[in-house]
Amino acid sequence: MRSRLLAIAAGAAVLLTGCGSSASDPALVSSPTPALGGGFGGIPAAGTHDPGDVVTDPASGLRIAITRVEAVSSISGTVTVLHFRFENPGRDPLPARGWTAPVLTYGPSDMPAAHVVSVSEGYGAEVPGALAPGTGQELKHAYRVNRGDLTSARVSAGAVIWDGDFTR
Image (cartoon, rainbow, N blue to C red; front, side):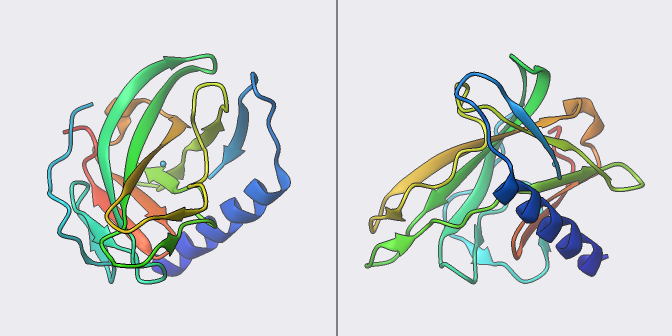
């Protein structure tokens, strides 16, 4: 299963590098509203994590959490938006570039949700540059999926994987 997810994530990264979008029109790239709990302690990224867990990315040292999942009316129609919070707990700036769009799969067949990129709505942006020590950044990623269908879902962002019910 993990190898399948890594293959899906790699495919999404390849698709993203070849896609562009205008400032006003969203682009779809196939690739996953209540507040989710957790402080910013950060647990290691090995294995899968609950939707509210704060996870430390082994590659960068960044602490990453999905802080909110919400259904939103977008120029692309109704989408589910995942809010990702990045924090740099260290003493040195951490390069944050290279963040690829997380892959969202859901349901018993791990159906991939289409990733919606909309510059004008702030969906699908990259982490800009490096994060200074003790600072954070929030990014929003939107997906063409009904929030109610995320009772059994998986979000993978590189080596970091959250698995569970994203409707709570």
